[in-house]
Image (cartoon, rainbow, N blue to C red):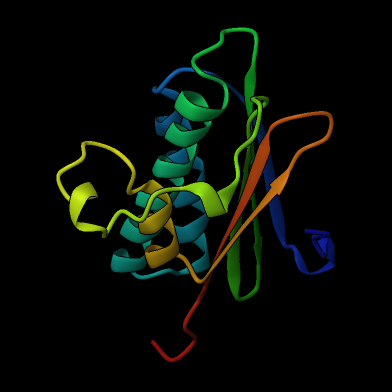
Length: 147
């Protein structure tokens, strides 16, 4: 996921605690940038939900609420897009091994839809292992210039 940062116009980086309240900080940072770029309200809602889901996954499944582990957040923008990178310091996971949230036996489960929602709300979704450990996801939403 070698990011091309040459087209970035703004970049904000934060180190967040492994608590669910960190989702509020991350969502706020992403939405502030989305508003500045001119994303419509509907897209802002999608971005906010996707970022919140990714942070919750990092805290709960990645870092397992471990107070010694942090969540790494980067919000970057270019002239036509918003990119949010979220990394945890956990053991990592295999994207292919996640259960299908649309399978009949999973429809009533309380969790398991985060990645599904992120993919539905964002234009790009990438997952990679972090070095020395953990998982990093990169979410990208493009600004529709026709609005």
